[in-house]
Image (cartoon, rainbow, N blue to C red; front, side, top):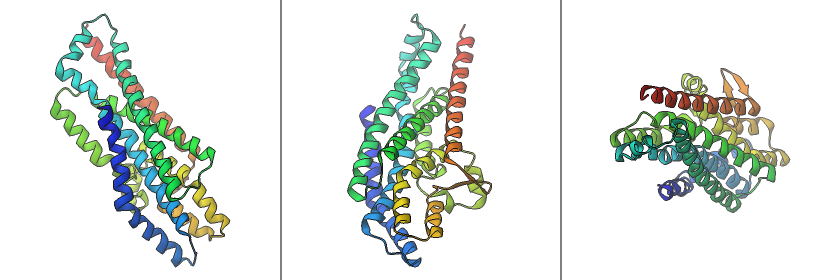
Length: 280
């Protein structure tokens, strides 16, 4: 399961760089040239690469957590969970062990994927500082914590292979859209944008975007790109997120993401306590 999960972000990187990079490159280049700005291929590569990398990490940190957490369901199907429950192990210890195993596996995969993505950025256009890299890795850790907590809540009641497959398919197909990874939220209708603005994963994607593209926007400003053009690009790739017309600051995004992690972990703990109480 670990190696299967590891393949997922690598395949996504190949697909993104093969099929989406040209589309994004043409979009950025036409928008900048229409504004009368001359842009180098290296700068376009950094801009496109930053968007692709942030999209990949935003999706992988959550979907890989769901894949890793299927161990919880498979233990129920195989009967291993029943063997563990009759052992002198507290239910809380068992619940924590599933959470930590998923967290460690997903974090290893997320950090390895981040390393590969940084290598890709070095190839297409590197504009990151050491602070940007550290912030990007922090975003990965927070999204892995969020994905692990969310997958623990969703997978906990599942008990059949069909249920696990259905949840995995839905999450893999749908999460990338609702978090703004496959398509920028700015491209959605106003009503859908307002709905998505309530989802914590949206802000995790935006944080990754901001840190992956900060150096690119700084370089644009150094080359005297018009401020309105830079702002328009930041809006178009969701570096600037708006909650009912009000711009959400990065600090607030961190608060939202941390609050979502705490709430999801609390729900997971409560589900385990209620289940343990029923079996007493």
